[in-house]
Image (cartoon, rainbow, N blue to C red):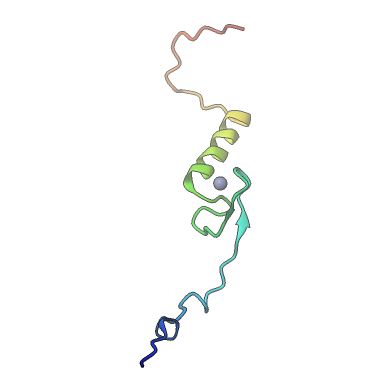
Length: 71
Ligand SMILES: [Zn+2]
């Protein structure tokens, strides 16, 4: 009888790397993304950017034709 250990042949390669997990400020999801830190993805980074743009900064010079303001 031969017993094969699949675990012994498959070495854990992620053992050496320490993954830092942080919380995305936009969606609150735990993520280990480093590319879009502190966000989890480009989408959340874009969302944050959108909030920032809409909240405190207005781009002028964009094609703003007759836009009626209605309340
Ligand atoms: Zn997110």
